[in-house]
Amino acid sequence: SLLPRSGASTSPGSRRMGVACGSGQQPAGAEGAGAAGAMAVERKTRPPQRSEGAGFLIVDIMSGIPDERLDPFLIWHELPRSFHPPGTMPGAPMHPHRGFSECPYAKEMVGKDGPGPMDCFLGKDHEGNKHSMRQGDFEFGQVGQGFMHEGVIDKHWSGYMHFFQLWINLPRKNKMDPPRIINCASAKLPFVEVSASPKVTVKVLLGENVFGATSPVVSRHVPAQYLDLELAAGGQLVHHPPPEMQTRLAYVYRGQPVVGGTRCSAGEFLLLTHGEHLMVEAGREDAGLLFIAGRKIGEPIAKHGPFVMNSRAELDQCMRDFQAKKLCGNMTREVIA
Image (cartoon, rainbow, N blue to C red):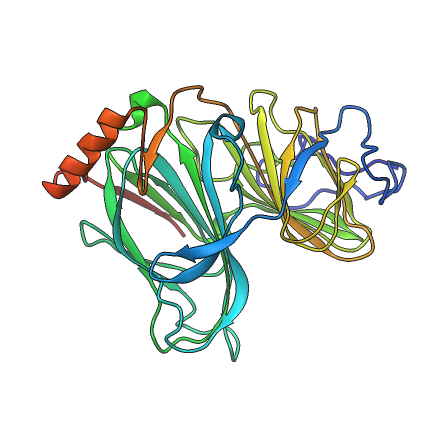
């Protein structure tokens, strides 16, 4: 029988495919022996942890990889799943950005006694717009010319959190576009049940025609995919990203999946080769991983803290604009709820 594959013909609104997982492919545990045409793991790392924001611990997922190999992606951070007693999660106070798109994903946020109204990041931008980011929600913030924002948590909240933050670069011609933020509720993001038994699901944060589903959130200037893949024990899938998206990366957050023939484990970052398809097998336990793919921009990168431009002179201008309170553009915000 066939592994479930992305790109199959379904109706645009379909949330489930009637395609069974099978075992007629490369067996799990066959180290380095990926099937013909499959992406292989060029390099895997166990990224370091460090302090971020107002003092919370993050995993710097792509640390140590050259910028040109990650293009168009700039940073990818994980706030590891952990329990936070009241008042111990400081969040990120008001801070500036310019020159890229930021994409936070709330993988999990639930109170110690179960779901409740305080289970959210409280966001605010430089124009006073407010929003709440809850479990499963996704934000696409095209920073462009610049904005300032914050994300904080009620000091009385206590519970479990698991967050990710991804930055996608912008081409030179779009770095000074007006800022635009899309806040998308989890319920509006396609959640495709690729297989019922073993259960295999794909949540489409960014991307078109992924197992027949398309995210309502669009990266206008840099074609990209951002997928959350979850496989029950024994589950398998094959995904075909568009050929133009030659940068393919993954991060394992659960289990010990076999990716392109290589056994991987939770907490590992995977730099993938330019194969035609991604092949993932869960093995004997449940597995979860994030997959990103993007079209390269191929321009010089100059970055300093929250600013990403093309030259040192442009970074200096960012600092002057920030100090003169001229950094931010007129904000457009779209809420998909």
